[in-house]
Length: 465
Image (tube, rainbow, N blue to C red; front, side, top):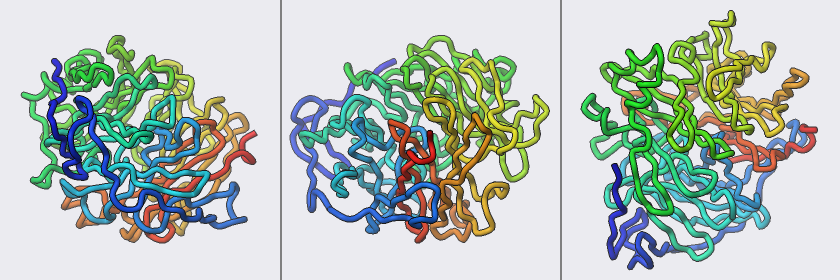
């Protein structure tokens, strides 16, 4: 099943009608107003943090980087991508526009390079750099009513719209994969785009199951296809096949490994439009060798304030997964940082001493683990509610707090207020999402010490030997 891009003489983007196509699918970006703004990075609690920390976003709006597993630094690490949100606290509205911005870390300047209607409070505009140069930056937009991947050319100020949407970009820059982004808000807000004009996410039905799943767009041929249908996941779900075969299914996070050999895919299932019932699959990048590497039962064990399993992420070796789990089947009752192979084997507890939290990732040697926490995880969050940016030395089983940072943007400690729960959305939710730079010598994270979403970087060279 495949479709071609809709070829037109004019393409209407979130910034408006921008003129004639230069080539099929290519259109000129109109950057109105100031192109570049100089400002000064601001030290965060100088002399009071384990590593030197700077706020790198201006104080003129609400900013965030993309996610804890998507590097916001460009290929040379000179540039840094952020989303400037149109507001915070309020529910995202269909048609409202966010800005795609590039920070020059050498010049301490920022410029808006694109504007998009495809954004959310957790991933922003899902920005990703080209894996081989500083020239291209990828995002999504709503064009002619469709959610599509857009490649921004920062050299000649053009952009190309593709046939399908992006959740993750392949390491060879040749394809993108994505669930149906219009349905992701059914299981969790903040990771795709605003609800449609009705104000509510539109659920799948059982009739949609044969025609939906993980989508792939070939960026060379501009062909969009149903890469892995839901039926293939159900077929390989082992003891969970019965449950998922009777549920309405949704996909959540999808991620290539750095070696471009495998994909991680989170599957969720709802009964009567309720619940998540998550499990985890891996598969080869050609769609073969689909394996359920963490079952629904193992994922969903819960523990007190820590919650249930969460945030699978590729280890840099491309063979293992890093994830918070509650491994009851091994006799543990707490949330722990865990590692296992792409096929579910070799399950390992990374630390029994330091409990799991937040969004864990490991640097390339496997020695250091980076994580944050949720406010409810009081076993690592202090009485003032500030979120720790945690660094674990897994060889020595020792932990340092790089810094703590407030992430309250007006919910008075609650990331989902009663109003936001009734409306949907995640306007009060701000996770730090700490992420490594490409050389693993710097980290970035979100914070809001002044109740305004901002992005910070910390120099890790003195902490990592």
